[in-house]
Length: 212
Image (tube, rainbow, N blue to C red; front, side, top):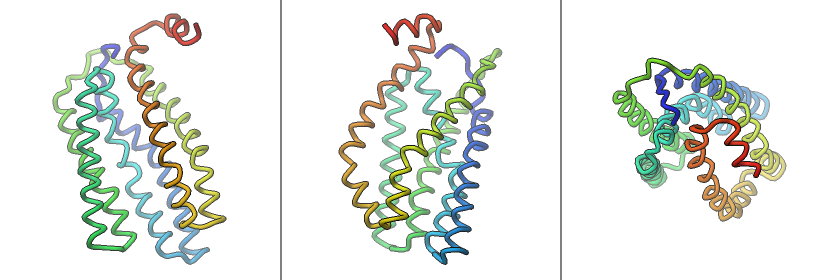
């Protein structure tokens, strides 16, 4: 939005490094469930999650680029296309297999393939700016820390329910929360639309808009 266009591949590598933190956590949980709890399916599920985690959201950085360029319609079309493709693959898999490991594959792989395709499709059309915003990586790192804390806080109830009441209770709990979750997702669009506008302004103007 400020006119700086960095290489998406450079940002991609940074995001994948951050994603590896989640992978390490997932592998630790896999060891715990495989060797201490003797739970084969849950242990190998965490192994697969750890393998795919750095790729699952990292390639979605094209959404930030489209949002910054105010291509909101194109971003929405890509998001809908990815979700439809992934949902179709998952539903088709559920018809032919009840194996939890295959279902996990059907959840992650379509998402990753679709996002990789869109990422390289957009990346080929971008000409990076001669001058880059040197604060970009630092700013992104701060946002990643904030997002990590937010994910941990929001996941705490799920972790406690799973450990003390079991997976069936967790499924019922999440189904009951679906209406609230959908309302939250609707309101979460507001900051995404506002951020490109705010990034064009000076800090003093942004503070005035937020606090007056």
